[in-house]
Structures are given as C-alpha cells and as structure tokens.
Amino acid sequence: MRRAGAVRWWAGAGLLVAAVAVLVPALDPAVLRDTFSAAAADPVALVAVSALYGLAFVLRAALLRRVLPTVAFGQALAALHVALAGNHLLPLRLGEVLRVTSLVRRAGVPVGVATAATVGLRAADLVAVLAIAAALGPRLVAGTAGPAGWLLIVPAAGAWLAAGWWLRRAVARRAAAAPGPAVRAPGRSWGRGPCSPGCWRRRWCGRRRAGRGWSWTRSTRCWSPR
Image (cartoon, rainbow, N blue to C red; front, side, top):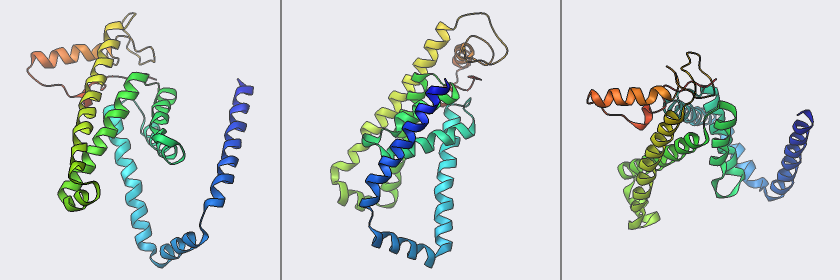
C-alpha cells in the first residue's frame, strides 16, 4: 500500500513536470504582462469578479448536495474543482469523469448514481446557459451559432430528463437488491434501513398514495453512506 502511494505520488509529480515543460514555452509574456497590468489597475473589479467566480462554485456544490445529500459540502466542492482542472488539462472534457471518480472514491457514492447526477447537472447547466442567453442576448447567440444554435436545448433537456430517469432507476435497483436486516446506523453497505436506499421505495410509494409527485432531486435524500 505504501509503495503504491509512492508510485502514484511520483507519477503525479512526473506528469506535473511534463505539463509545465509543455505549457511554459507556449506562454506569451506580453499577454501575461498586459493581464497583470489590467488587474493591478483595477483591483476592486478583480476582487469582485473573483468573489463571484468562487460563489458560483459554492452554489454548484450546494446544488450537488441537493441531488446527493449524503455528500459532504467539502467533498462536493472538491469534486467540482477536480472536474474543473481536468476539463482544462485533459481533452474531450474528461474532467467530468474525474468528478464521478471523486464522488465514488471519496464520498462512497455508487458509480451509476454519481454518473447520473453528473450528467443531469451538466445538462442542466447547458439548459440554464441557453435560457440566460435567450433572455439577455438572443441576437448574439443567433449571430454566433446561427438560427440552429437554439436547437441545442433539445438534446440538453433530453439528457437532463434521461439522467433523472437513470438516477431513479439506479436508486430503485439498489432498493430492490438491498440485502440483510434493517440497520439504524448509516453505512456503505447501502442496505435496508431508515437512512438507506431501502427507505426510498417506501417513501416513494407513500408519496404516490398521497397523490404527491416525486422529483429526481429527492430520490437520494435518504442515503447516508459513511
């Protein structure tokens, strides 16, 4: 175990050195100088923009916790930053894969649930961006992406709905396959109990009998992995 950790550490350090060796020659000193000069000329704007940028991540972490309430806020924030780094450093936006990996390895979320939540939230991001563009700058979008650019909302909304259906299916499968006796203490076994997927079906059926709906953001409210 200790040797594996050392190998991972040295592999990461080697990749970091290789990335720096590739990126540094590509930097434009004039652009960096202009950027730092502009930031120094208006520090108030720099602080305000940085604060808003950080607030966006806080809100996204809170939304991730609403979908997966058993994930700690720090873990949700860490998963978002890992995904951000991966999207900037890896091709094909593979940072989203790292978000799923972070949720699975560090927060104990099942792979299917983490994947469905990630797909749903990214699709919701795209729908929200298109809605904001429609409200504030429809001509800009039409001039940039053409009239067909608005059709992007169709696959985005479809992915959002499909992810919600996928998440509900994943919870239902785990509720049906939950083995063992009921337990009061939360655990990663995801067995039956008051704070486990087994209670999802009971709560869902109760809501159906009461005539109330069930949204996919509520589908994991009773999960409590350690």
